[in-house]
Image: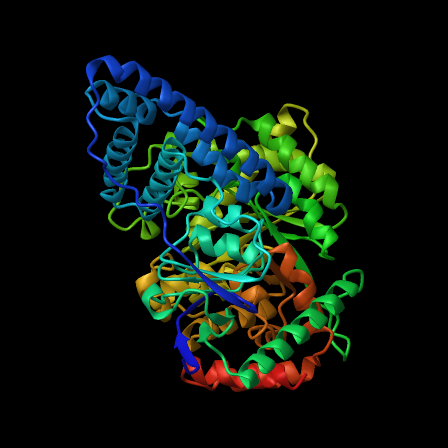
Length: 572
């Protein structure tokens, strides 16, 4: 079979090669086995044993994930464990068994019933949870029929797993084996699978039908270009090997620079900070050579529980993070719930368009007691480090002023109560086009901006970033997005406030010369991406980056911009 190149959607950067392994999931289906009345108790016992085994295997998996990937990713597995303990799930299965169905059929019927309920919910975050329900149900089903929990065992040669889709728990499980890349039919850039693949440094491409790839053939997966090469020629393979070796050299070089500052060849310094979701992740930022935290996503403190964390709970989390990072800055974003982050006890009404609805600061300004409690905890923690308080989802000046009023109210309360607090800065995220357009006026109200380019891209281009069907329209290098970023930069320069970025663009090597050329003060990203970006910063000249940024702003097409930036990076 001759060499064939197939174009897909890039999910996780990098290049790898190996033999294809076509993974067909065990059919999760109704077996239509009726149970005699006298055997019902035996089926209930079988179900309870499988339930116990499934929970135990997920607990082990959770610990493995926590150790290798951190608390945020472990939270995905924790949610699966909680589902196995949900009375609605368990009681429904037991009731279905008592109605004369086998344990396997009862698990299937209950799973599909609950999954369909989730799929009918307008909220995109809850719709995505339908896949989690099926993941849990099928895992329980496999344990009932005696299938092996990990489907790849004793693998000795590098494999590229080809699948329609992989559940997060399946992906984490196979990562323990010799899997070097993924080719998927489904999955968008912000899916759980994509997030985990990036954490595992697994080159991944989606949007490619399994039928196009034969079993046990040689593949090259280019997760940067979004390309899969089937049966590559010797020259193509040699080229891929050279690229992989180059990437490895760059990674080794990048790690060797972790204790050095991110300074261009002509002396411009830029701060490289890390994004975290839990206080325990602060150490990762330091270990990868970061000089601060540019985004602490506090909403994860509010999730997977039945009521909001109280002031003391929040204070302890913020104090630990600030103390661990001191004297480096820590940007703590107030709760960004709603949109794709569901917090059930907030009773947010179901909306047709939740990303444009009741979320983030809009909740805080409506449920003032929630935001005031969080602000009090933040102010109390400010004595323990370098605190930056950041408000998300700002679209108008009045919102900023109202949020600042709550800070003033909190300071008055603490002073009356004789509680000490330290100094802090106040800023906002620029993630709505109206905020970028009004940046000069908003800059008069705060100490700093941070560009949230994930949502800024989504809102500017009218593209749901969680929808794989429109993923090719989602591009943070679109000229409209870049011009809004430049407009924001000009406003901060004029008003003399700090400007950072905490979206995916911060860790994109192609975007780096543009961001350097605009003179951003800090770039915040996944901690593991810091060495790679630091290495590139130290190879650039600031004056060259400024020329590149000006040239980019004159371009009209994202493809033209991408090609130009690729050429600029290749010349380093």
